[in-house]
Structures are given as C-alpha cells and as structure tokens.
Amino acid sequence: MLRPMPTAAFFDLDKTIIAKSSTLAFNKPFQAGGLISRRAVLRSAYAQFVYLAGGADHDQMEKMRQFMSQLCAGWDVATVREIVADTLHNIVDPLVYDEAVSLIEEHHIAGREVVIVSASGAEVVEPIGTMLGADRVIATQMEIVDGKYTGEIDFYAYADNKAAAMRDLAAQKGWDLDRCFAYSDSSTDVPMLEAVGHPYAVNPDKELRKVAEANGWPVLVFSRPVALRGRLAPKPTLAALAVGGVVAVGGVIWASARKRRSGA
Image (cartoon, rainbow, N blue to C red; front, side, top):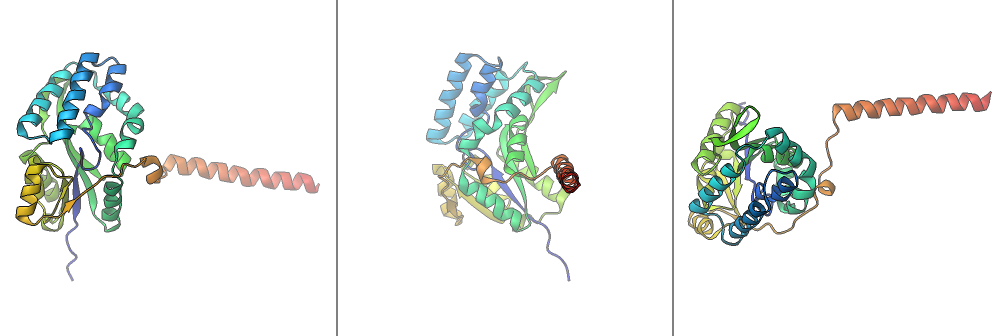
C-alpha cells in the first residue's frame, strides 16, 4: 500500500501570524542600536500605519521594499542579528495571534511541516520562525558584501516569487501541494494561495476578500494577541538535558552521602 505524500502548511507572517509588519516592528531597537535615525523611525511608523489601515497593494509594497533596502544599505549584518536576538521576544511576543499559534500546533500534530513565507528579511524572519516552532522559512535575502548589506536584494520573497519558492521547496521535500495549506491576509499573496489545494484568507484586505469569495476560499479572523512565552513550551536542548542530567545525578549522590553521614 502506497503511503500518501507528505504535506506542509505555508503561513504568511505579517498580519497573518503577527499583527504588524515584522521588519518595521524592529525600527526602535535599530534606532537604539545606532542603525537608523529618529526621522527614519517616524517615517517607518507612518509606513506601518498605512500598511495596517489600508492593506498593502503592489505599489505600497514596492515603496516599502525600496525604503527598507535603501535604509539598510551599509548596516553591519552581525549587529542586525544581535539586535533582533536581544529584542525578539519583547517586540514580537505581544503581536502574535493566538489563533495562528493554535493552527501551527494543529498542523504539526497532523504531521505537516510548517513554513513561514515572508517578504521581510531573513535576519528577522528566521528567528521569528524559530520562536514560533516553524520548520523552515522562505524570506527575502539581502545582498551581503564584507559583512554589510549593499542595499540590493538577491531574492525578494513577494507575490509570484513566493509561489515559485514554495513549488521549488515542495519538489525538494516531496510535498503534494494539492494537499498542502496556505494562509495569508494580502491580495499580493494570491499566487501563494493558488499554489496549494487548501488556501485560507486570514484577516483579508478588500481585494483578497473578493478573490476568496469568488473562489470559495474560507475566510478566518484572527484577533487575539498572545504572550508567546506562556503559550508555547520551549523544546529542551541537548545541552539543557545534559545539564539537567548532571544536576539530577549530583542530587542523588549528595543525598546518598548525606544519608550515610547521618547514619554513621
């Protein structure tokens, strides 16, 4: 008897798993780290408002892409990664939708791999993916020369590029895309949703809602942010298990020695 091909669930990140733009959410920590000016932070705050209020159409996403790529030109990559690692939970924790976390858990229980697919940069998306327990991510790859961003983009994980990357990954992993799931909020992600057999519109913008209604796609509403540290139990690392084992053994030895001394 043939076993069914493995499957996956693909999640857009911004406004699908978290309630705002993941890249723009880090602008204050980037300012504190000396990477951007106060003026750039204010401009980013305005971009975030436009993004949340009206949804991001193609023109808005293109303007945001140009703004972010120009902004990060010359940044030290190691510094960016350090800032993201140091501030990740404080910035992202209050923004994660409880409903999205539950869906990720359900897909894992069903034996599916979970993939986050985001137009944000890999240096931001990868640690968020790890925090959420995702198995892998597809994200924008900025060009890096001598440890610094050039302001150019090697791969832009947006629109048709998302769908193409999903198909490539599915071919590598042997996933049957007709049995896979995808979730997004934006009409720019219609190619991503069309690539799978089970597409879902999450908090959809007006255009995506129209497409979802025309195609009979389910519409989900996510509205409950959650503190992720209390929502997901972290997986113990080998090092933690080893330390725990040493502590446990040490405790048994100490207790045995104490018992011998008291009985002497």
